[in-house]
Image (cartoon, rainbow, N blue to C red; front, side, top):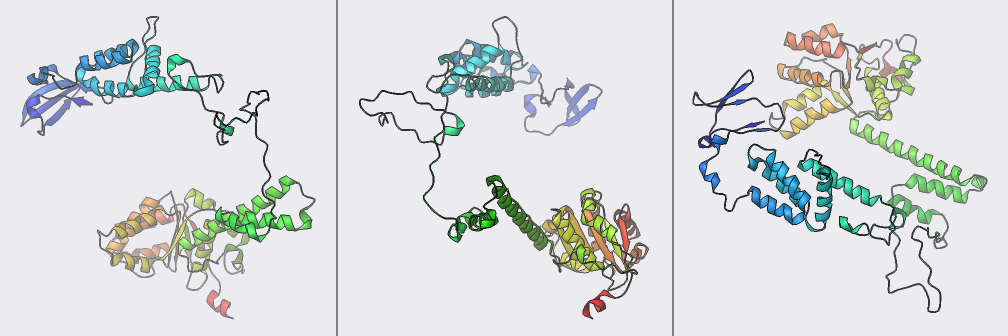
Length: 454
């Protein structure tokens, strides 16, 4: 809402107090005017006494008479709409911008469309619709749509009173080059036949070529290399001769979809900065003493935890496979089209420590950590962190809570994390945001690094 003040206060800062339904304006502790509160968004509340006296001299300024004269040039219905828009405002000048916008829609060939829209808004049976710039704009769009869908032919112009030219040919023929009128396809002595613009031109077979490696560059240029290779294989392999055309197309299409999905996964894995992008849940070792089973891994592979924003906490002593399992979960997330980032907690803290607080790269990295779908913090709080790093972790985890998944690996239990954070309040907040609702996996068993090297 906009409330007026005496014109002498233009450019000054005033104070406002609202009591009940009354708004009072103060200048230097002195009440200068009061208004009744308005409840319409964008409304003007103006006191006529606040208008300066020189506003009576309107030479060279917008006036009601100016807009009425311009509207009359378009038509009587447009003038009526402008009159009603001006009369609807307590101060006529408040309607001038809307009047200008309405008249600007009637430039050039749109004059008749604007007049027709105003006629419909101000019908001849005495009824009145609410008039505004938006109402006129929507009515003009309705008029154009009605004319565009009217069933008159291509060579028959639209009704002349709307000022709209001939309609365009159907969409399926607009790319077909039409011969100029002076280049007639009818030879002298032959009877003229009416052209059927809706008739489809029969396709012309391309120049005789064979599907081989020479056309693969064309498919690659369209980023359809896998589809092109499949088409070439189909054309050169007799085993496909008994297939229908649809089967051949769908086969090539499946190959292209699979190749694009593979490229998408590789792109996500590269962006994750995982030290071992080849890690996958299929290679997890299920030893009896490792405290992990195939059913649990199969459930994690489907990525429902990513969709729910659920955290995963992987605990265990050194070298039991915590980091590999976290990296395999990154691969599972990327296969389900989720983004991921891998960081060692101490290295991430060191990276932030050397970045100035006003460095744009620092803000960019913080936003990346907040917005990534899956964030892996490896060796979480294995070494103590300072107060600044703890506060940063708290802010990141607070933004990610219940929206995005965080995976942490640690040699210590959550109760031991308190000793690594100097501020007990921050430590409690971090612990709650990571553990609440998280899936906790406690790995046991032999040293997996030694097992791999044997």
